[in-house]
Image (cartoon, rainbow, N blue to C red):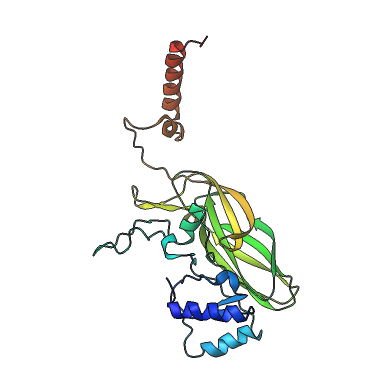
Length: 289
């Protein structure tokens, strides 16, 4: 992830004689930026093609208001990547990170990053308000409509990409803290307000269960999370999902009491087992003098 040493040195030499420095990156993937705290601005151009120079000039001189958002997280260094310890191990490449790639990994680890997923600045500012959901409780056959108002509070016309994430509060299985489920781009004049809208269904809350070879979401609470980036969360709203889909029972000698009590089909057996345990251990215990 390192830039050629000569390029890092060039930036450092310029910074030694000029503090007003904007770095423009032309790169095909994230790079390490040891000079980042010292520069006044960073323009991520990626690989823009033939007319990239004119486009950059329009942005740098304010002719165009930038509205792009990062499609990936920019980590601070190579070793921060979730694949660092297993990628490139001889002739075999093992994808051991599973669900926890990109922002899902960095958020779960609470790890600092150079720039988070979906990050991007503008020459204006936006305020989010009035998050509404069409209903607070849905079934697995319903659709949920989510709306949020966005206001341009600056003095320049601009575009904002509103993002909707879903957070699973059921603790049914280990999942990312939140997952992107939709986004809506709105163009706003100074002082103008528009409404971003999203439609969610059962699949929006589900994860793929290999045991049933189908998508599954447990009955329980979920949170609708609205933000301008994965780490720029503005509004949240809790909803409740009721599903008729049941996972097959798999009770064995190592099934825990907690697992028995968490499924309505085994609660009576779990309570009976718990009462027997309480009676047995209660009879054996004696107060300490």
